[in-house]
Amino acid sequence: MTVEEALRSLSIDVREGRLLLAAAAGFSEASVIAFPERALPPEVEGKFREYIERRARGEPVAYILGRKEFYGLDLAVNPAVLIPRPETELLVDLALQRDFSSLVDLGTGSGAIALAVKQQRPAARVVAVESSAAALAVAQRNAVKHNLGIEFRHGRWFEPLAGERFDLILANPPYVAEGDAHLRDLGFEPRLALTSGADGLDAIREIAREAPRHLAPGGWLLVEHGMGQDKAVRTLLAEAGLVDVEGCADLARIPRVAAGKVK
Image (cartoon, rainbow, N blue to C red):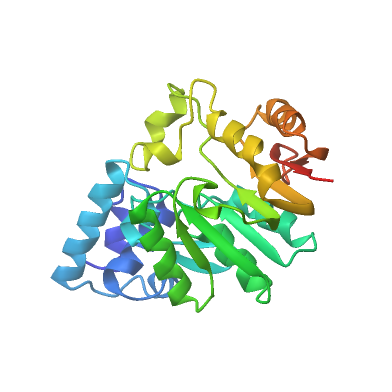
């Protein structure tokens, strides 16, 4: 079988097929495109078929490949962590617009947010908190891979941060409501990192309530949320005593992040 024949037989998206074929064969996607006549060894063909079957069952390409790019970083991912989403890069952009010397990323998962910020602000102290030991191990491997000095803490939200205060708190917590129809399409990703109560806001309530005790004077909390949750999340931040509360929209003008600071 040639590259061209393999791609013609696909039952999935061609772009995804090229990525999976390149991974199975060990050469670049550009090479897949440039040399369609190249013959595939039987072992490569077998691995490619395995990848295609996994994708056809709904497994995300990132888990099949074991990696995902985020903010220019090639990150290892597996089913212990959520796959970093492009829209979460807004949270990093907003963080980098502020002056800070210390930052904590709550629920770091793969470490995507903490690592992206640390890469851009190498002098800043960056702490990453994660309650899942398996997810924390993934984040630690990514930090080593990119030689970025992150302080990792194992625990739920602020529990491993007793008495500590930061200039900036970032969080991309679970915010999908239990029973949401979209969960059917996310069956391969860790449910605890996706859902948070009947309205999806339980984690954000807890973070907003505790954040003022962990912010330095003038420090900011930035929290990502789901579509349609912007007003409710801004209200939670204001009720927690944060001021200058604002909503921040992505390039599609969809509010994705709520921000507030302590006096």
